[in-house]
View 1 (cartoon, helix red, strand yellow):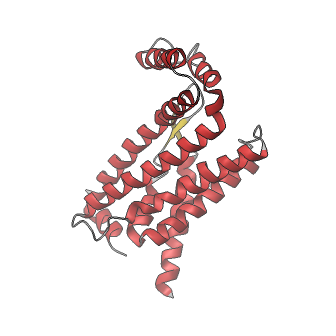
View 2: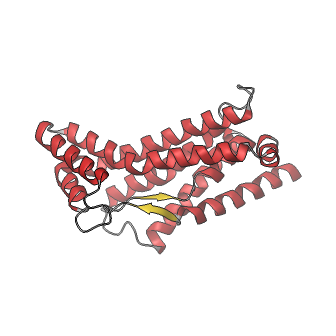
Length: 225
């Protein structure tokens, strides 16, 4: 009972830390999406330290709480229809964070804890990416042409205007609109949009995990219940 209470306490603390980090944006694209300050790391650590079961539980709780805060307190989903709200809440919040619990999937299957949590963390974040991709495609894929235009127009007057990355995304968007039709546009748009923040999140998260595992005391804490 004491061990279960201890695990629950650490899980709650991790969820609170993840919530705090999720509101800290280290980079925001002109078209709205942002890269957060390692908000997935606490949940990945719980999933590895206490196993997939507790990892999934913590991800689920985090997703529900974050979704409710964004919807009811910060009103970030006010423009959505009931169906769109349900898709975003389930895919972008519940499922996307639930799957982070799979960070512990390779524990005891690989001898190196550093390799196991890095591989498990990468797998979990890729699943997170997939959830965001599906959500974006369902809601915005049907009008990809419109949202490609919004993306490219957002660079005008922004800090990225005229940069190589703005030019690259603009050229890519124009090529997709010119050479692709139907759902393929939606899939490509969703892939590009999701990649702009999820790839940096993946890289930063895995680098942070590797750094943490390189610190002996932190490594011991993460690797032992």
